[in-house]
Image 1 (cartoon, rainbow, N blue to C red):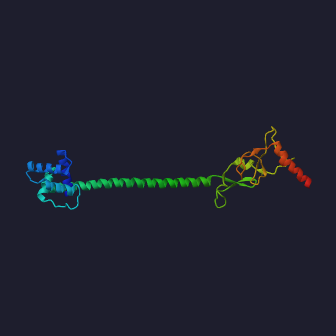
Image 2: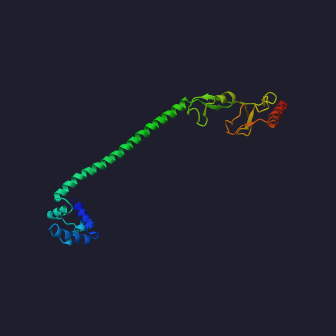
Image 3: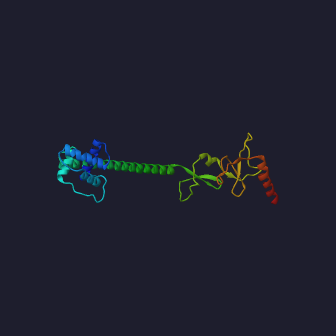
Length: 241
């Protein structure tokens, strides 16, 4: 508390004198105490207290007498040192309570944020699980898509596709036969689509889309493909028989 008292005194001396040096402030206080407070303290004493309480200089510690503490308290606007101590001790808990209040408020906000985050995470997770289980799924099974449950123990995630009724009904892999497969619709447009598999062999499908195993876009059948890869193959097979 003495440290605060002297610091306040030197601050007031700085405001009154305009000086910021140790010697200037000490000289000002010596004059004010002598003329206004009728209390003689030489500037060397004030300089020592400046070193002790403002500069925190080691080896300069002294214990101010009570009458000096009273006069310094009077100089900065208090009745005596006891009055200074009481009034400043009253403010301390208030400042502390403000700090605690701010800290408590911050902690409260963080706890609320954490709570809302956890709730949001649970809701999102629950919704996602619900959607995954309620959503209909399908996988490619050699020659066609079949509907299955969402079961990661049975199927890899990349196998599972969102259910598509049109693909379930219309998208099939077939063995194209030269004289029996309807390669074209009545209007002349393609009725069969093709693409190579991982073994570079042509495979044929009953609808447009992508190859379910390679991911490549299927191409509409052409007369060249029919002649070169289907009919010629059937012809060779018949000859070998």
